[in-house]
Image (cartoon, rainbow, N blue to C red):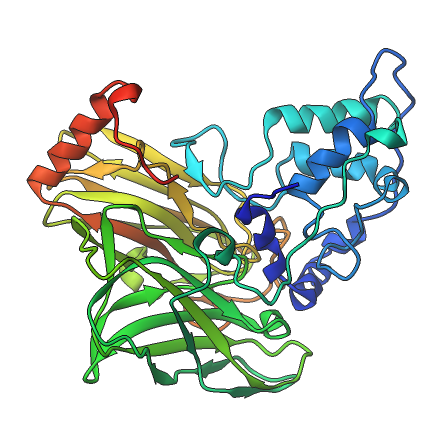
Length: 445
């Protein structure tokens, strides 16, 4: 069975991350549970109806040796947790993709969310008493990829460039560590980037809190390359845009290690870069930028308290918002992105109301719906924080929490990929979107 690449993404969260889930009590809820009394009028079975859904959505993590706390490969294992599975998928806690289904833009690339039909099928199966069905209906097992491989290579082939950070020794225990080596790319001419994937080592994924990267030329900053945090695969630049790698550039890493019981010697972060052909120029430049809430200034969240912050951002040219990725730590519980049009109208673009710091997703908008802003429009970013015991991820509601870089601190920003347009390009995109589908240009989706 050929699987979409985004289903493989969850392999990047390892046993170290599950340890955090244990600390906040999630694993205590994963008790064995069987389904309710059978419904004789329901003919949904595991082998024919449920197993294919689990293959497409769950087994990449829930298999022996993977991060999932139980295996969902065999009927007896799945039946044991049937009611728990139903609650998790109905609440959209699993698959772990935090994006509200009833607010804003819903057409996304690399969307992990389980369909309403699949959720209904699982619920119906549990209501029927979780029958196994005919073993002959069982689909062939999936051949899962090597977790050490680049996931985007399935789509783009082998990377054109791989940049390795210099080795770093991560202790078993200790405070947060930052490692900022600078290494050459080996690229000798200006090139446009097609896709980027940042990959910690297999064992290092347990301790790599984030790994950001930027370009430098002759010691000067020359733009952002990429951003990595727990749960993220990479970034895909839309066709027609160019995120540029300068000739003879170095990559400056900003790696945050979080010791949590795994000692690693000589750990390295890899950044894979897929390039367009040398004659590809791109119509407009794209940039990935950290957009602050609260101006990036300090804030404090009182013990057992809550907080809301906002940030406002405008642009000197028309722009297209290609992707949006909220970022915070354990007290962030929700974030939204809105547009305040220059005529005073406000539009909600996206909302995440069940944020988890264990899964950082770059929500990539489909080409035909990626938000367009004119000069005079503003982005509004809003974040909500909960330092009470009601927040299931809160490690200690008795503590004051301030903004900062440590894991114990909070953060208040979003990563947004923006294509910078001119008026001609802006009007061209608007005109293309108004055409009938049969007349629109083909795009790589």
